[in-house]
Image 1 (cartoon, rainbow, N blue to C red):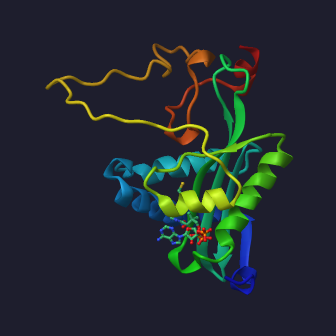
Image 2: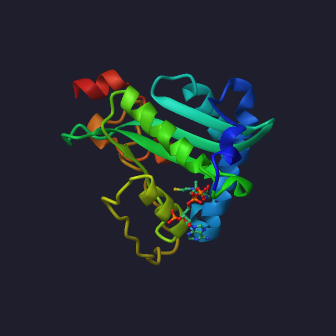
Length: 208
Ligand SMILES: CC(C)(COP(=O)(O)OP(=O)(O)OC[C@H]1O[C@@H](n2cnc3c(N)ncnc32)[C@H](O)[C@@H]1OP(=O)(O)O)[C@@H](O)C(=O)NCCC(=O)NCCS
């Protein structure tokens, strides 16, 4: 591992015209995750949804869509988002590392570390005292990498498969707005990209 190997890489926030690069690396990340567990595969039609999310948030102060470039080749992606959890909790704001991907040819260099460091700097300069992320339990390489970046595990997600009663359709998440009403702020939480969208503004959350 040498610093020269990343010296010619440039890290910069993605601009409008670079959505193709974001989408390419986002697809590769989720292909990687789906190989660890098929339940993590992206849905049909994910790309316009991601495009919409990118268009709405890439210039927002609460998000960082950072790309690493080797000449004109995108080789790394970091997505950070400000997270507001339910006002039920005293500690409800943190900087969430939503996505991290380094192209295979650039692994084992310091690029991944540089991206995480950029995420930490973004978090600190935006007033957060914590960076947080989800990682697949079987992703040993990523877990070793995060540990080396100074992160520690604080929670685990446990799952059990159940057999659904035939013919039943799961009800909607109650935090979704219904009949024209925005979700109540106490019902919000979890990972932004994984969350169904609601009409709640940050002001509503702050005043809840
Ligand atoms: C996670 C990722 C960003 C880390 O970047 P990286 O350049 O691979 O990280 P490094 O090579 O610096 O460090 C990886 C660590 O895992 C070890 N490692 C290397 N290959 C490994 C393998 N096949 N299996 C397990 N560990 C491995 C390395 O030795 C190193 O450990 P060390 O610090 O004790 O020496 C990158 O691997 C990646 O993009 N992976 C695919 C997407 C992904 O998993 N993203 C994170 C989702 S939460």
